[in-house]
Every structure is written in structure tokens, then in C-alpha cells.
Length: 112
Length: 113
Image (cartoon, rainbow over all chains, first blue to last red; front, side):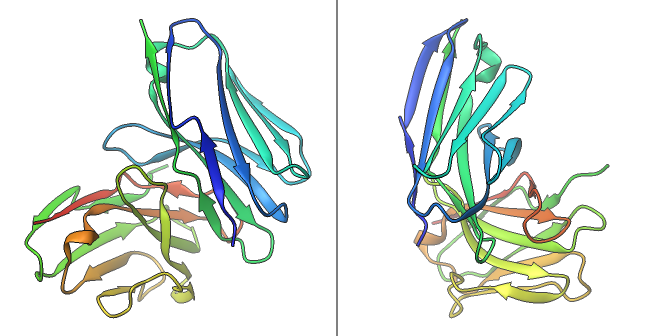
């Protein structure tokens, strides 16, 4: 069974600092990995999707890396802003059954 | 393009009552998912539909939860009777096909008293 862990559970940084969010997974037989953002009381918004054959994806200030063999992904957010405050969830899709397994998320607070 | 729609947004019921949630996926999306997200946890898949057929319902508590997607478009999730531990956000998502990016609705927050 795929287990997804996100560390830390919560993070507070001053505006302008770079954010580093970690995700680890136990089964390396993945189809893809996705990072989501969730604002309080809202659904999930997809930020980046990395296919198993890729090593990274970039979108604006966001960059996500994937090391499938070691079971790790990292989401980098450059020059954080108060609007980046949210919970960030990592989700891994298994290659055998396409099931999506989520981590518990990292709650980020960016202080103005 | 309209996103995934869910209703109601909030629901408060007493234990042993029944409740139903509705989801309308993005037009043309064949795959529809229902997730349960308990506070402080990531979403857990309850059931996955491919068109109007069930692909995976292994984590659906079938003694009290049921779901249907009769015409392969919108879907309903029902809980009967509700328990305190069912308090959670119920998220609906859809994707073009299995393995494609999932798009999530805003969720329904259920509180069972």
C-alpha cells in the first residue's frame, strides 16, 4: 500500500523567503505525482503534475522535482508572498491501478 | 470552462440521519471520484466511476455509504445513517480519463452532531 508523508506539517516564514516542501512515498512504481494547493474551506487546485519519466516541472515561481528511485519530491516556491499561505498536498498515482494517494499536507503561513 | 460543481456546500445533521451530496463533473470527463477528507488529513478515495460503472469502491463503507452515476454524468453520494466520525469534507473530482489530471470541486463540509 502506497504511503505518502509530508514534512513539515506546518511552516511559517517571512515574506520573500523561499519555501521548500517535502514529500516522500514508499512505492516507487508511480505513474505520476501531483502537487495541490488547498485554501481553507475550498477544494484542491492542481499546481504541478510530474510524469514518472520527468525529473522536474516548473510554473512561474513554482518548481517541483521528482526522484522516483528514492521516493521523494520537493516543491520549491520562490520569493514567497502572503497569498501563498495555504495547505499544500502531495499526491502520488500508482502505475498499477492509477489510485491517487495523498499526504496529509503542509500548512504554510507567509507573514507580511 | 465550468469547473466541478458540488452541492450543498455545508450540511449539519444529527447522527443516524441521512444525507446526500451531489456532484456535476466537468463536461466530457469520463472519470469521477468521491473523496473523504477528515480534518488534518489528506483526501481518501471512497469511490471511482468510469462513465457510469464503478472502478473502485474498496474504501467505501458499504453498510452506510452508497453512490451512483446513472447516466455517466452527475453523481450522488449518500450516507444512511450518519455517524459522528463521518464529519468531514466530501470532495468530488473528475478527469478526462483514468490517469489524467483530476480537477476538484469546492467540497461539501458535513458536520454530524
